Image 1: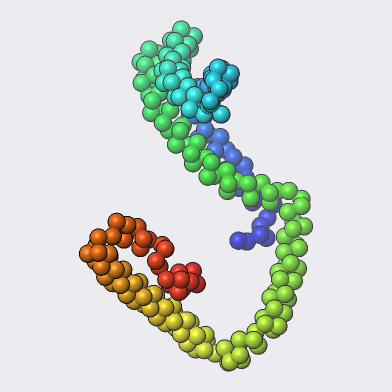
Image 2 (image 1 turned 90 degrees about the horizontal axis):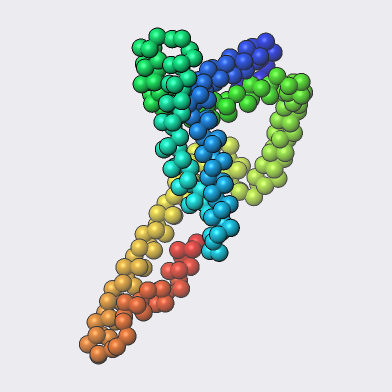
Length: 242
């Protein structure tokens, strides 16, 4: 990310994003926000009543959500009809225009919901643009190269201190040595997985033989229940954990 950007460009980026977000939120503010605020108030009021009248409810979140849903189902069409009546009697617009706007309310409400969802993502991008406008941002930008130099110094010191303990892998300054070590490590893990699978198969075979023997002897205990966990060799358990 390029941090050395002109202040005027950062200012333009911030206000441009703010303008777009504000314009996209207008349908949601007019059609969804009043219902959302009223539904939250009504649901919280019913939640308090439910908690006061019940001894088993802890938070009454079911009451909160159910009341929000039921209130919204009734309040959304009511809000649309309220806008229709206000425009019909007080706007002076043509009846066709008012009816068209009323019929478009469901579509505009859906657009408002989607715009709010996109706004939540855009706000994350708007925050860095705002922080760049602060006077402290330039000081932080100037301090970044110094911090990077300190980190590089610590990393190189750690590599110089612990690198020789790797032996030839560290002393040979060739990438082929690292690739050979990586292949050897992957091969050992593959071999270990195959060995674990083989041990489990052998254990299953021996367990099946014991089950048959127990069944023929008329054992009342369930062999399968005995097999689960208790009869797994500790060596296999330890190998799995490693």
